[in-house]
Amino acid sequence: MTDEVTPESGLLLVDKPAGVTSHRAVQTARRCLGVRRIGHTGTLDPFATGLLLLCVGSFTRTAEYFHALPKRYAATMRLGQQRDTDDLTGKVIEDSEAWRDLDEHAVVSALEAKVGPGEQVPSTFSAKKVDGVRAYAEARAGRAVELAPVPVVIHKARVTGLALPHVEFEVEVSTGTYVRALARDLGRDLNCGGYLTALRRTGIGPFEVAEACELAVLERGGTVPLPAWRDAGPALSWLPRRDLEPEEVEALEHGRSIAIGSVTAPPGPGRVDGPIGLLRGDRLVAVGRIEDGRLRPQKVFPAC
Image (tube, rainbow, N blue to C red; front, side):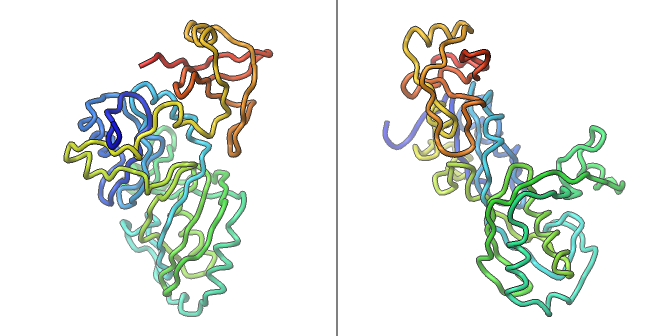
C-alpha cells in the first residue's frame, strides 16, 4: 500500500480547523479509523488551527514522551485592547490608543526580550486547575481566579508582519507556554494591552503540519494519507535508540531487563538517562530506562 494506511497502533498527524475542539477531533478519528483507543498529546483551543498529534491504539501509552518536544506557532495579535480570555473570543476589559505611539523597533524589541527561560502566568480562561477545578470553569462562573506563574521557555520568536495595531509573529516554545498569554504580556510590556486574534500550530518537535491529514478527510470517512501516519517505532525518533537481538525481544516481552549494549542518542531533547526506545528493526518493542546498570522495560508493546 503506497498512498494510504489502515492504522492500528501508531501516531496520526491531524490539521485541526478553527471552530473545532480537540476532543471532537479525537472523536472524528475514532469513527474514521474504527479504533476506540485514541488520545492527543496536547490540546489546541477551538479558535486555533494546526497540528494535533493523535496516539492510536497501544501507542496512547507513549503520550508522556511527547511533552518535552517544543511547539511552533504562527500567530497574530492586536495591540491596544485587552480581553478577559487573552484572545478574540473574550470580552473587552480595556481599550487604549497608546499603540499609535509605537514603531517597529519597539514591537520587535519587546518580542525579542521574551526569548529565553522565564515565568508566565497562564491565561485565566485556561485548563489549569485551581483546587481541582479548571480555571476556565471558575472564570466563566464569574469567580476570581489566581494562577501562579509557571516556568516556560521561549526558544525562538520573530515578527513576521506589522500593520499596527496588528502584529504577526512566529514562536517556538516549551510545553506549557500559552501563546495568548504571551500576547497579553507583550501588550502590557508595550503599555497598550494586547490579545491574540489568530493562532496556528505549525509544528511539534520533528512533526510538521504540512504532513498532517485535514480533519475534513476523516469526517468524510476517507483514508489516511501515508505522510500523516507514523508507525510506533519511527514515531519516537527523537528518543535514544537501542537495537535488539531476537532473544532480547523475548526477554523484554516477559518483563526482564537486558544489557545496556549500544544506545544511540540522536540530537534533540532525548537523553540516555531518560526513556530509550527499544526496537527490532522499525518495530517498537518497549520503552525502557537504564537502572542499576541494566536496561529495564517500563512499557512493553505487543507485536501487531
